[in-house]
Image (tube, rainbow, N blue to C red; front, top):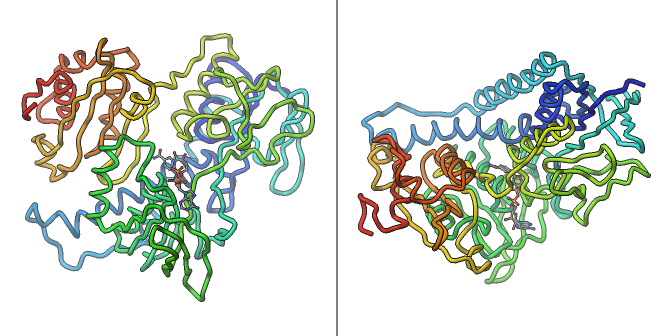
Length: 473
Ligand code: NAD
């Protein structure tokens, strides 16, 4: 049996990053993954690279270009005869990008001397890992440390089982061969909004059914309100308080039954995307007697250092507590690799940025006003609209604002909430400031280039003390 210093189970952004960092630190490392890509071959990179972050961004970008061509180019004086989208070419481009990145990880593994194993891994007692390949052959390997980074899977609704033709999960909604005429989406969360936006921009009638009465309950209320207004303008039909009870396939369509305040309703759609959340992919991961515990949601129980409580067994990413975000998993992976190597690994969970890649984009870090009110923490806040930012006006992307929330007494930044153009990038400034325990005055005193979108962050920080220059305070 081959023996390693570290075996990582899962080659998603948590696992592959951990494996590379462990190898960099001189540890003999293996990484096991079971994912089979579109070409029927093993593909590293997990959900993020194969069927998540990267392919969805590719389609979001393609569909945004098409939407601009059909909607906003005319404001710039640009017209084109008969604009059309070839969905197969768009999806093909996405597949090429995925292949480039999954292949890139294979190269990085080679370069860093990480040994890849392809197959489904089960942890046995004493840190023995059995790997069952696609051909059924089982290989056993062992290690001083095992890092579980098994990721997550889409939650399936019992009345709307995925057939990946008519009723699809996120992976299915990345691979439609043509724009559906009517797309139903269950769940107005991150996936529902991002993939709903892709197909809406290409012309689908998109109806999103959300069980909760509030839109984007996890986000700042102003951000949610502005985003909802913009999404409605784009033609996304978002029905809140809509509890779906049935999805019946009738020929080539799906009849979806839901109940809202007005009673039972039905819609008929050509494709149905179920995006009601994800669960930890821990089924079959642990053999009897490992001592690793799962919580009531099937997640691996870990402490603040991602340690399972069993000697040499760690867990990171979507299969443990905390937000299911690629960058959160990657940072945990690095921290654990460093702890294993005797270094000081650490993740600051208070400054993890959230991004939703809709149009306008949504991004935040830290606490919302609602959370601060509930915790009884005194705060002050300042906002600034993109409509007053020269660069945003020049770009024709004026919807949205930046809000900076600071402690009422110490001025320490507690949260920054953005909705607007390219805020996925602007949020980095807020994260840096918060990581360095910065105050709103710190951002207010930093020189921001003009004309840039970042001036909205500067002005929002100035606005905390009612001294924004380009708006009435
Ligand atoms: P989510 O938790 O973001 O949203 C699911 C939504 O479905 C919720 O609003 C929930 O109230 C609703 N819902 C649940 N059951 C329902 C039902 N029966 N009928 C109607 N609505 C129902 O989950 P998601 O969008 O599936 O995404 C899964 C995970 O992937 C999330 O944790 C998310 O953070 C992550 N993700 C992140 C990104 C990103 O960072 N940009 C992108 C995609 C996914």
